[in-house]
Structure formats: C-alpha cells, structure tokens
Length: 335
Image (cartoon, rainbow, N blue to C red):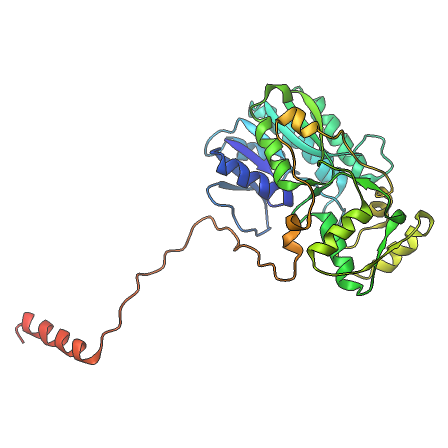
C-alpha cells in the first residue's frame, strides 16, 4: 500500500487518480479539521505532517504501507502554517515515521530553484526538505519539477485572476521574459508512478520539465487563449515590479512580493529529461490543456468515497388499479 501526503492538492489529486487507475492500493493522509471530497477506491486516514505519531499510525494501521509519496508542502505562510513547521519539520516527521514503520521507499516532489541557500523563503524551505530526504538513508527519489500546471495550480490561477480583475491589460512582472518550462500535472503523476518500479530512479534527484521553455509572456498568451479573452500585455520592468505587487495585492490569489521576486529567475530543466528517464514525452502546454479556465467549463462532480444508495423508483398507480388492488387485499384477508 502507498501512503500519499498532500493528496488533496493539484499534484496530489492527479497522483492518487493515476495510482488507483494503475491498480495500486492507496491511502491518503487527510489534514485534521479540513473537509475534502474523498477520492474513490482509497483508504482515508486523518493526520498532519506536523504530528509524527499520526503519520506512523497512517503507515501501520489497517494494512501496512511500503511506500510514501510526500507532497504535503505549502507555498505561502499563514498564521497557522509556517515553512519551518510544514515544509521542513513535516518532511523530517515523514522520514522519522517511515523509519519507525520500517518503510524504505520515499518519493518527494520538489521544484527547480529549491536550494538550501536560496534567498527566497519558500524555495529555501523546499531545498532544506530535499536535503533531509537525501540524507535520510531511505530509498528515495526526489523529482525536482519545473512549474506544474493543471486544475488548481498556482501559475494559471494567478494569471486567470489578473485577467478577471483587469479588463484591458495584463501586466507581467520582470518584463514577462522569465523562462519557465511548464509541465502538465498528469505527466508529473506519470513520472511518480513510474518511479515506483524503475530502479534507475532509486536514490536519485531527477529534474523534470515540459517539452518546451516558454517565457512568462508566452504562458500568459496561452492562458488568455484558453479563456477566449484578449488583453494587452504590459511588460513591467524588474525595478518597478514591487509597485506591481502593491497594485495587484488588492485582488485575491495574487502573488506576494517574495513570490513575485522569485519569478525573476529562469527555471528550466534539460529538454528531454522526462523521455530519457521515464520513457515518454510530456505534452506541450496548449490552450486545450487549460480547458478548466474556459468560461463554459463545467468541473466534474466531486469524487465521493461511498455512493449513496437511491431507493428503487415506485410506479404510480392509476385510481382504477388502486381500487382493484384494495379489493384483492380485502379478499385475501377474508373481509
């Protein structure tokens, strides 16, 4: 059985679906106090990566797990969730619980640019988490991924919110020249699934990315096309980016200043790394892949763990039939 942390996020949902469809037994660690639609054909257990005992219980209760896929990370700090507690200490708890439960296989999805000495808090915390995994002594695989897109991702959601709130223009930080290599979430899930069996991925840090390097302006154009909308791209130079952050902060789902600053760095992997390691070519980022942004998009119904039973329909009787039925019952009762 495979335990998946962060199973309700953009990547987590795709990974769980991929594993279940491939015939794997999956257990999802759902955060205490948070209600989420439960995926089909999985085991649900409550817990928190900040609580090592809850991870251990998830690994050992109701069928032992032999693999952990660790996806429970945060991109932004809040009063309740801090990088130190979730990204770093949470990863250490996963490692310690795995050792207690004698689970040897651990797969983690990090990101390009995550380094121990990164000047950006989010990337630095992920870099430290990756370092903890590499030093854990477990049979690990760390997938350092380029920016991931799919329903619920941060990149297209952010661009979508800008287009929704600004009717004429779409301002792009750092001139829109930052090079990214977006990879579809379904391809990331496929890489994780294949990492379970490919020995070449054992004890390795592997960079993955999409089949093409796109600038932020290119991605904005694809996003707008998926939404069937037009905006004039305004290239905001880097020295003025902090003014852009201040202006956009009035809207929801906007990037913070550290997140916007992090977009000034190119994040690309070697083209063809996915094909060389996992044997398939990732799909290109095209408007059709972003159908979830289109105005008429109807999201699929949320998955449920148990389908409610509906009573069998009862055919209505016409008055004559009802009268005959009552007469037959009286005859049977001898009345």
